[in-house]
Length: 244
Image (cartoon, rainbow, N blue to C red; front, side):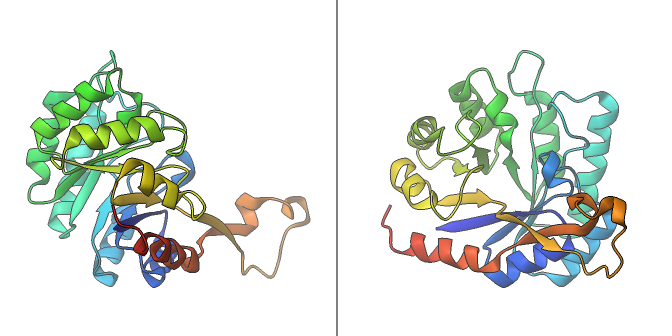
């Protein structure tokens, strides 16, 4: 089984690697659902880390209905990731009616090759998940990140299990959102999925010695993103005892 960790900067990526992550989804702005990392972060992470890393290609937070200008930004970001030697990318595009934007998704998959493609939780905003599943298989996506069209994967477990059965090995169904050490075993048992996505977000105290009195209680000012590496090892140990 495989654990993918969503990271939000260089340090959380380093901590995820130390903890034994099998794959990284590299983001910026994880508190906004993840947006495309900066060119500098992309370059340095590719230089420093050898494990598979999939940057998210998302030009802004909000919905997954993109303008022509936003689509062009996605194209340019994918070309940058390909030129840097990344293993895959993560994106998702929808039409106004909640269907997969098949035309532009196909264009981005072709542009990304030979990188793999994960269709992210835009899937959870689709009107018909089974139609979307069939379309993404046909388009050539390698995996779907989903919480089962619910806020968290434990809540969407029933649909995730149905998607896994329908996929029949033609595409990876990867539960994400609310995947924690206390929920991952039950998710694996109930869904029979073998890849899991989590951020394991925590906070790290700032090393600043001066803290302005007006902002002493501001997490945005004096607490940095973190990951507990030991939580990754604990989740992998739990999964190692299961037979799916």
